[in-house]
Image 1 (tube, rainbow, N blue to C red):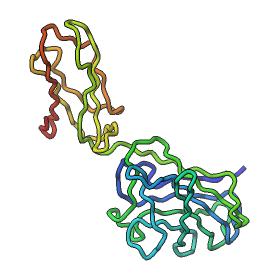
Image 2 (image 1 turned 180 degrees about the vertical axis):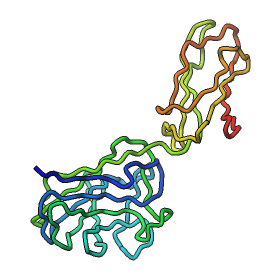
Image 3 (image 1 turned 90 degrees about the horizontal axis):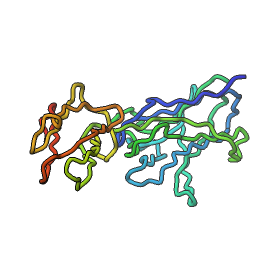
Length: 245
């Protein structure tokens, strides 16, 4: 049995990235002219959410539109959902579509200028869903939805954060966690190749002088640390690539 296909281009995004986004749907069924399509962005319009695009095709940046085979870009209508405080967009299919044909919903710039695109959300989310509801009768009676998934990953490495006890007993072992964060506080592994972090502290001991790589998880645990002399210990992290401390 033929099934519909949903995918995104690109399939992954960086938190807070401005770009052009394309959601492609290949239908398994015949869709007549006038079919209603509702694309749920599921954004509340907050600064951390996806930027809500405009429907006026005369705008030069941050626009949403529908494209089908052999047709011009089709504008949509913005729909507010007061209960969930989210926004969706409704389109009317300008032509018939046969099984196996594809339509695409675009967000960004009609000129494909990456700097005039749509702003991605600023928090990391694996398989971030976007829902497409289809009503072939054109009455807006939406039931089941098709789902696009897009991975939102951490942006460029900006800061390091250490999680450790503020007070420890002499010779008592404890764990310390180093978080690699982007400008929005997300865990990230997005750093230039060969980036190493030099970890040390004032009362230097041989077993507390490490070169840390940026892990895929965005954090690393340093186990079994202990201090054998009373005092205040200042941990220092130095990026050997940029020489930032």
